[in-house]
Image 1 (cartoon, rainbow, N blue to C red):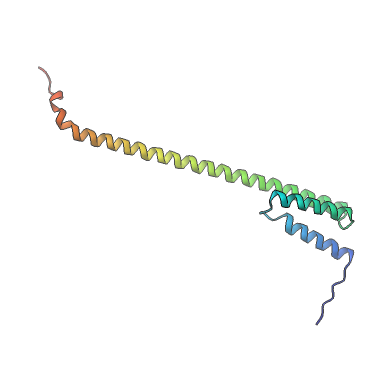
Image 2: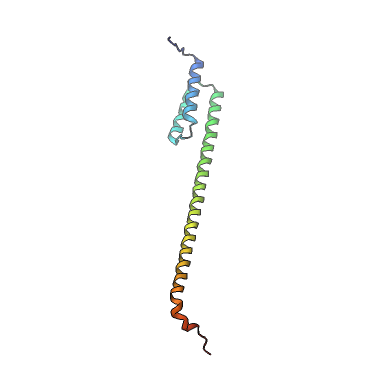
Length: 122
């Protein structure tokens, strides 16, 4: 069975929308890809493949996606900074505990040798 696809304005428009959506709304979209997608949308509108309403809707969706991605990157950076701060505090606490233990061990070691200092002088 053969399937014949007819090229129509609706078919081209639908293909353009699907392509733009697939390329433009992925979460792994880089800045270069973003610029390419914006150019693609502009060319599709200029050639009449996208109506002004479709174009505006896609541009608005792109901007919302950019804002969401920016917010997600900020959340990730904040979480990483908080995790690093927690790790640093835990490391400092471990080091302080280790120093205190070393100090206590040192006192236990030298205390018998200094007992004569603790004898009251009458």
